[in-house]
Length: 326
Image (cartoon, rainbow, N blue to C red):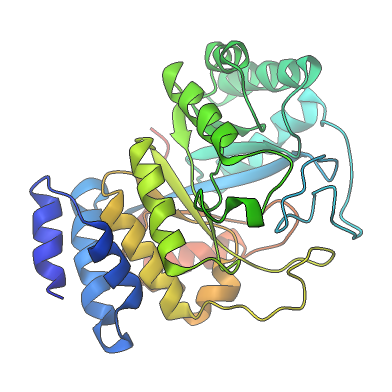
């Protein structure tokens, strides 16, 4: 496969076929650097050498009624994950300072829930208004489960910039992962977010036993939604979930190929290396910045991650720079 010619086509405004995307995932290790370089050419055109940092805050933890098999906060998970109701406005606003201190472009408020109730929605909206007053250049992302158009409009009016709602996997594999809601419900919420003018952050999770075709199908489903941001997570099997104790099926090279494939299919979207990057990519984390242009720092929802200073060093050592707030 001539990887450079594929990147040339994408740089000229063309697209990649499903067969070519699958070939990325099937490419041999000896071609990996060629694939990464081809993906980097596209990343560089749209995002230069900047890396956008995001910081997560788990504003409601461990009380989700959904049965997502990968999630340590789901109703089927048996563990000692901290459980608490929606945090106060004051605590959520305080969390924004940690994002500012780490030069984060976005502060992401995430709640474990099927959908936000009126009081929870009001808390997020009030917190957003106060955060914007204190940190006007900090972008706000929220992840609150399923949305109606009315709820999405309230978030938009309060100043939320972006809504996260991951598809997680392909339509075909989705029933193996979640049974308490269906794939179309996720698609519907993603469309509603776009319709009201919110940026759409929508990605998925690799390493759950899905096929290579499922990984490609997810990438093209995201392209069909015209997503603005794609977080790519790699399974880090959590205690109490059905995946715990099972070996990670992804090698660091597999993860890099998946990121490159996602860049080829969604060339203009912000591509974020998300949960599981430390354990899956290990010593190859810096190479992930060639297809991807964004990371989470200082941990995830229920798991720790690398500290900001370590991430900052990786970014700078690889010749990239942190994208500062506007």
